[in-house]
Structures are given as structure tokens and as C-alpha cells.
Length: 410
Image (cartoon, rainbow, N blue to C red; front, side):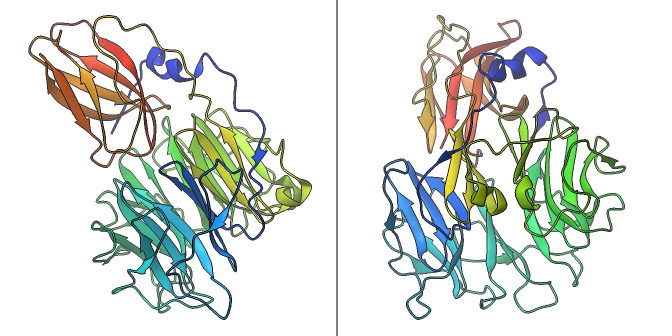
């Protein structure tokens, strides 16, 4: 995954709109732990209620628990996640999958460890359309660690080779094509999609969360919010973060070129950085005082950033949703703009070969596909991460890259 240094490309995402506004409540109820979106619906894991679903953009909610295990009268759903074809739910009785938008769930625990009320799938990540599960507990305990599937849960593979037995994995993140694991004893990196892990620099201290963009790695851990611009070899303190020792449950996400953090530090609540993690300011506008104290987990969709809180869930709109692009009068614009599996472009006017280049909001090249002109071409998703992209055409017969339009992978 290349980093595009051309400032003009990156700023086409951000220069026309202000930074996102305040958080808007979704009136989802209480107990919210984890949140995801798929096919226009919002899903929240909220034990002991189970999984809540809204197809009305948060105006109304129903339970989507058919097939999920009962513990007495409770459904102890602790995490939800999704890829392009399925939903996944981590419960205190194992992992479940839905291929019908939450109408029903089946167990896909297979070779995964048994779950209970202390060791269970706490977070669900998607990288290149593969599902990664992060369990509570140390690797030395029965059930700790990371597991992955490339076939929607038919088979599961351990994904913690190289992690120490006394580690507890807190979360995973992708940056520049590598995976990073924030663990209780250091920051780890995988260059083979979780097949093996190595320590990043000498980070032999607790790391609660990690993200990276634009040449900067940011971690939340035992020494507060820290930042590295040399791939983790050295770390520097940041400015404005509310704690020098980030507690368990701290979370970090990148969205629209900004970093957002759940601080788990009393009334500090959510913090945000607009300069690649160098400085931080509070960002709790719109949150109730109770939910400023009790934030759980972020989720990024193509159009909104979500935050699950103990007493409700909230969101803010993407600053790129209504971005204006340069006029494209020579080639056809990508269609549909919002897609799940593929989009198409009319390249009838293109002679010979070219490349379709997709640029994400941070200015990085996310994908590049060779195309042939003379008609309508189809661009398959092929594991492209959810989010907005500027779509460019590059051809030997053209100077530079020609902006075709904007697409959003749902």
C-alpha cells in the first residue's frame, strides 16, 4: 500500500468541508459494547439484551437474537463485526455468524476455544475481508489470543505465532499493509496478515490501542499517548492527552484523516487529533455527561464514525460524504457511488491500457487495477476496506492522473 505524497490529491478529500460536527445520539438503549454497520443497517452488541438492529438509521431498534445462545433469559453478546458477506457476533458461549442480515445466527465456533463470562471474543476486526477475533485473557490461558478466518468461519486459524504466552491482546489495526497488535506487554507487527508477529522497536510496556497514518504510528499505553515517525523505533510524548497512563479499554481509530481516542479517563471522554497524533483536544460535543464517562468502542462506516457508550450510541458524519470533485467530462464517472461488491466505469474513450488508482482519505494509494479501454470496465472489490475513495485513471497517453469521481465501499 503506497503513500501518495502529492498534497493536491489528499486535500481533495478535506479542503471543502469543515471538521465533523457534534455527536448525535441514536437512542439505542443501554449496555452498548460494540457496533458495526452492514447493508444500510446498524448493529450493536449490548449484553444482556443481545444484538440490537436498526434499519431506520437509528429511529427505531429491534432485537436480532434468533439463534444466539441464552444464558437464563439473557443474551451475552459482547462484540459484533462484519465483512462483505456476513455478520459475526462474539458471545460468552462462542462465536456466531449471520448471512441474512441478522435475521438468524448459527454457531461457527468450530475449533475456536470455549468461551465463558471472563474469556470470550471481545473485538472483531476485518482486514482484506478476513475476519480476526481478539479474545480476552492471556495466551497462556485457555482461550486467549487472536484467531482468523478466510472462509467466513468454516475454518479458523490461530494468529498469534510470535506473541508471548503472558500477553493479552487488546486490539488490532492495519497500517501500510501491515497489522499491528496492541498487547499488555508491547506493540507487535505482522507483515503476513497475522501469520507471525514481531515486536516493534523496544515497546516492552503495555499498549492499549494503536493506529497509524501519514507516516505516524500512534499508541495509547503505559506512558500515555505516544507517537513515532520512524516505524516504531523511537517514541515521543504527545501534547494535550488527558492521562500519562492509559487504562484498559482505551480505544483508537483513524477517520477522515483524524485520530479519535476513547480515553477511559473519567470525564475526559473522547479526544481527537487533527495533526497525526501530535496534539489532542477533547471532543465530547453532543454526548450526555454519563456517556462521556462510559465510552466503549468505535466503528467507522463509509458515511459516519460511531461510538458505543454504556447508555447510548452516537455518531458524527464523515467530512468527505459531500465532497465536490473536479468535473469529469471526458470519461464516465464510477457507478454506483456506494457499492458493496463492485463498481463500473465507462472507459469507451480510453485507447489502450491504463490503471484505475483508488486513494483513501489520508492520501494513500489503497489499490491499483490494470484496465483496458474501449468500453465499460468492472472493478471488483477484492477485499478493499470499507470507506470513501477518490477514483483516478492513469494512462500512458495522459499526463498525471485524471480524477474520475468518488466511490464508497460499504
